[in-house]
Length: 221
Image (cartoon, rainbow, N blue to C red):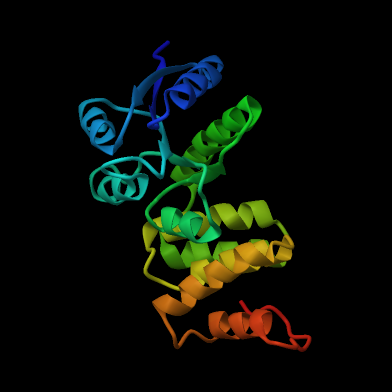
């Protein structure tokens, strides 16, 4: 059986060692890189099934690695790991193609679960529609059915196809809000608004959540 290869990119030796040992039981051969430059060289030379990427490193940081991979290896599953993550940086990473975002400190079980889910999502994406509008439509239908995990998968796939449209970001805000994650919802709504200030649902959702004395209003999607 051909073993899968993972690349762990982090400037902390203990993190690289811990992650290598953690994902070994999942059947991975783990390579490591100490910075973005080394990571890009290794990705150019080998086929990896998943990359665990720190955001904050000397030299080329994780966001820049993601930007370069978007044009050279857009299908490569990347999981962001960081000690300094914010919701805004998670949104930015997702726009650049990251599949997941995990904040340090984390447990080995959390890492294994996120890696397994990321690979499963990649398998799911191969069978999902490849049209932005169809993905958004299915995401909206899943939201209406309160199937928020399925909605998130459709909408993240839509973003990976076209990060320049507002609809999927607004709906991701809806998913977060329905989960009670208001602080996570606002950056999605703001991203949708920045992409298209004329897109009424995102503007109205922002106004609803940030009003000094918010009146009862429905989520718009």
